[in-house]
Length: 143
Image (cartoon, rainbow, N blue to C red; front, side):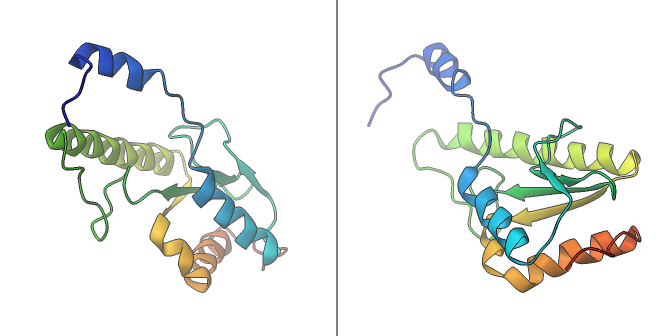
């Protein structure tokens, strides 16, 4: 189906859509951390890269990357329409993700990136988080 908007009109429309976060994937991790007594995290803490969760005291930043928006190597398939746009969009997102991670690491943060599909692997996700917290020496009240 042909797009009825010009490229400029489509750009304005897409720019007006302000997403706060991918609530579905984030809520899965919220539920998982609460269920296992993981405490001390904050959502949407205002630091570089806008991580989904941070443990401020331990300086651990967690990003939950959606398979579509961040170009998961296992699951991403570009839409069949406007394919070049989507390839560039995901490439830009991945570049921004790498840059955000670098900036945070330079500032002394541990960065964890979890793919949306990995949320099904609860034990593995919890292990990654607890290992990052343990490396800071602040796991005393965790898990």
